[in-house]
Image (cartoon, rainbow, N blue to C red):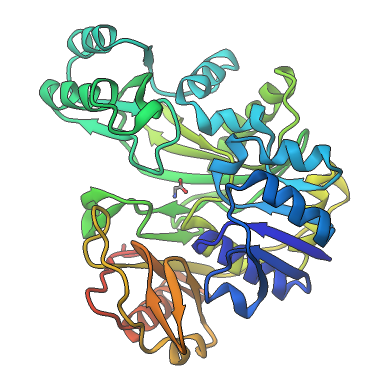
Length: 417
Ligand code: GLY
């Protein structure tokens, strides 16, 4: 099977690797140096919609897998489908679940899916009035896409006011902050629940967990994700069945009722409160770094599974199984997330990549001559695989300890009890 993967970060490297291992011939947009081991790079940016339509016409792939949310929100899946391609990724209508927080909250409430109380505000006066009426702590979210920078957990009214002004007056995130969603603050452990959706049916992956703060013990600034593990320890089959029944099944039913033919990855970010699971957010693609933990655990059949999803035929797909435990540790550059330093040479990669129970996924890397150098904030991730958490964790940290570059940082507590 010939597959074009759109995107070139850690999540897309995990997709490329898993699909190539499954026997597919893989192409990827502006492939990073890790991806070029398993895929041929094509010289088109993931947000160049006309360029991607042209590339797909030339390559004639059996399937296009869209990794990042931006092109989905911009309608990439729609233009590719109207050119006759099978695509894993929703059209712009379904991508609004991620592209607009206000839309997602209205959807959740309309379909009776549990979520935090919220107010959507289109003026500063309205937003400040909600902040004063509700008091702190509360959560201020930019309505639009913000690459993980659009959510502020405000512990005081002053912090909430600052967040509202930064988004709506200073427009720090541009138009993404023109509308804000203010939510009650919820407490509890978080879980990432991801499933393939073919418009009517679901294929759910084992629940996983990401770690969004930069430092151990969930301290420091929010990041794009510093680590993941799959499955989530201590979660019973009955709990997972409850999350499917409370969240995933009504989401698909709601999409159908709203006339949205959603064919792609449905990601519900859950918080497990005392009153039960509630949806914090939807994403419409694989999580990053969750994909780096979920995909290496899969047995054969991923390419057929994704193709069946794109064709609306999950009932005919192979039952792809998952094995063992995966722990993923992200290596970030000095200065990440505010101003990451780039250009530092990576050492030790080959030795780590040769380890049987370790998988390295590149993200912010670039080839310079025969060397690989850092080229972004999240440089790469190391996934350790094992029969249990202890073995997976030990493999992940053996791998992370073996890769060196100036200013390298990684959390030491991913998968710790
Ligand atoms: N790990 C969260 C995300 O991909 O948005």
